[in-house]
Length: 49
Image 1 (cartoon, rainbow, N blue to C red):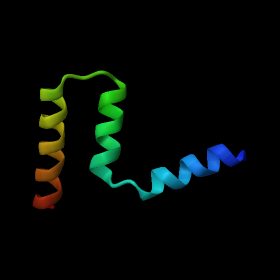
Image 2 (cartoon, one colour; image 1 turned 90 degrees about the vertical axis):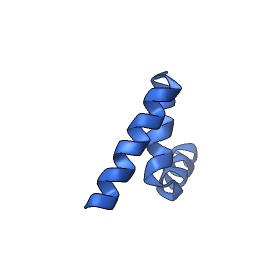
Image 3 (cartoon, rainbow, N blue to C red; image 1 turned 120 degrees about the horizontal axis):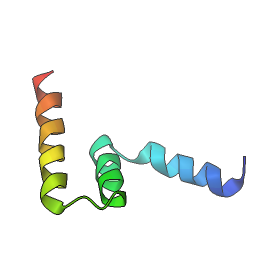
């Protein structure tokens, strides 16, 4: 494994779930309102369970 890839993996491990989801949503160029909605759904799911 390359050093760059290892560093990237370490950074990913440090990120929290909602930060990772935000990154993925932004990468796919979803609208801001969609991002907010998805984050809200995830938060509600986590708190419910």
